[in-house]
Length: 152
Image (cartoon, rainbow, N blue to C red; front, side, top):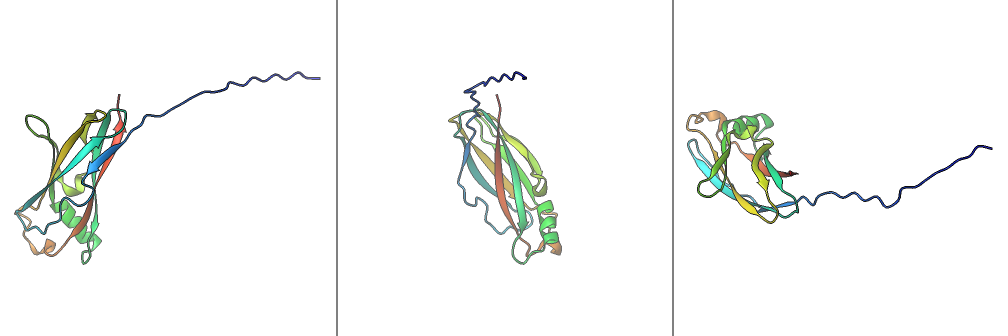
């Protein structure tokens, strides 16, 4: 008769970090009609409500508004310029500058510590060189999506 022996290793415990951020406001910060040459600005507060340091990334999610086709929305998102600044003392730090369509997974905050917060300022503009008829009467719906990643 074969002999079988088994042993059980009990009560192993694994946990994950509490990683969480909150933003304020959660409603629209930019809701204007702009003309070529205009720039509009909005601010979003980002707070680390978790228990671990976090890097925060920003993506502009967008799509066509009513009366605008997917192709027209893409032209508009490519024409719009965006600047993202992190409010720091003594002066704001530029985190991104480029096209609206290119604002994808850009790190805007490095090492946000637990229980701290900061302000992100976002400006969106339509360059004066974009005054042709292609973009007249076109609109996009946008969301600014923040993603936190834990860092040590």
